[in-house]
Image 1 (tube, helix red, strand yellow):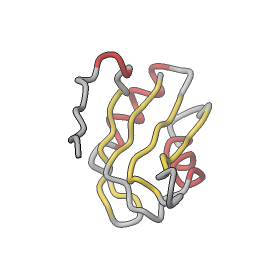
Image 2: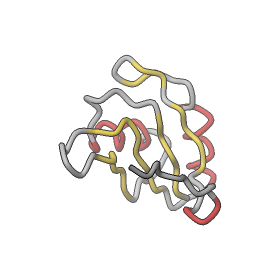
Image 3: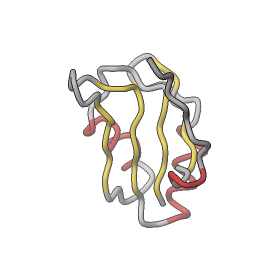
Image 4: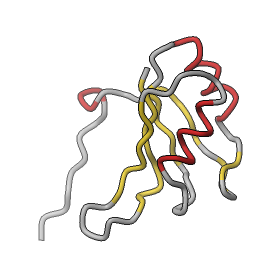
Length: 91
């Protein structure tokens, strides 16, 4: 299951995210999304856990919990096609 993790402190690393979720089971991958120009964290990331029951337990336990001074928002990631299209302003 792919899990969205938002409201992350900018100092959180992939390893920090992996460690937080590994307490609940096997973590396939953990990645913080970075700005392509500056390389700095965008404040959110994704975690993949192969076992759905472990992933559910992690989401329930970690949603609203603190990591490096900020309370995380944790829920199941939505496929890109399910999200509404964002319109960019034309200049």
